Amino acid sequence: MLNILITGSNGQLGSEIKELSSDYSYNFFFTDRISLDITDKEDIKSFCKTNNINTIINCAAYTAVDKAQSDIENADLVNRKAVKKLSIVAKELNIKLIHISTDYVFDGKAFKPYCEEFQTNPQGIYGKTKLDGEKELININPKNSIIIRTSWVYSFYGNNFVKTMLRLGKEKESLGVIFDQVGTPTYAKDLAKTILDIIPQINNEKVEIYNYSNEGVLSWYDFAKEIMKMAKLNCKVNPIETKDYPTPAKRPHYSILNKNKIKTKFNIEIPYWKDGLHDCLKRLGERK
Image (cartoon, rainbow, N blue to C red; front, side, top):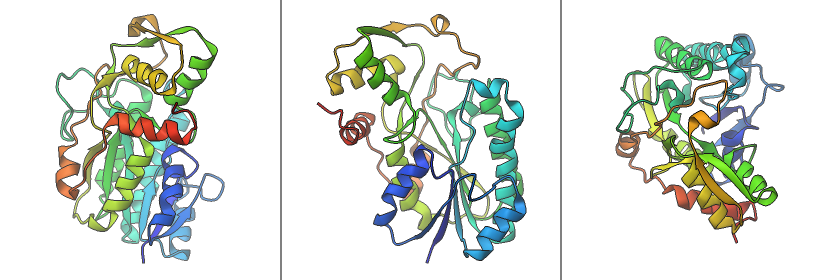
């Protein structure tokens, strides 16, 4: 029996895993910062021993990209130090560790989809601390562990771009959305299903990195236009440049991930981004 510990279970990905959990014959342990302190090695170790954990899916992360620029200590605590503690326990107890990372480890200056081995160069504190967490995991190197880098995550749960656009689309006649940042959204439900499907196939001596997002390429502007169209909202979406919407943290202009490695290794098909959006809007009661 697979006894799976989910950290950050109240976030977008953790919540989607929770919803899908009844479809799998695994034994799940869903935790948050109150029920398990992942910055405390002994707390992690005790929990894993008590519950005979043999797989950890680390969905916990400090994801407030702009706030991280000034809240460096807490971003580092969750995105690097906690990953180090989880990695040490995973190695000591021979636990499979699946860690979720981000496209922000790249600088967004590429012109073709990022492969896993492409040179990293984070442009902000969030990306830097996520990359530092990856490095901790790779250095400690618990067997049968993987890193999944993903981008533009949204979900039925939590706060995200889709929900923000739905709210603004009902409140405003028009809004501006950035058109010079391109990538691919990741529907957290699709990622959750992929993770749960591939767990039995993960078997590697050293930590492997995989990219995952939905299929397709678009800008935030295109994404917003499609949300309004599917939800039949009459809000006009206008394209704006990144320079017209300054933020504390620099966003990558190009976030397209090459997903060939994960598709080939685990023989999976990844849904098209519009299919994921359709499903999410339907669940939210917004697909008109």
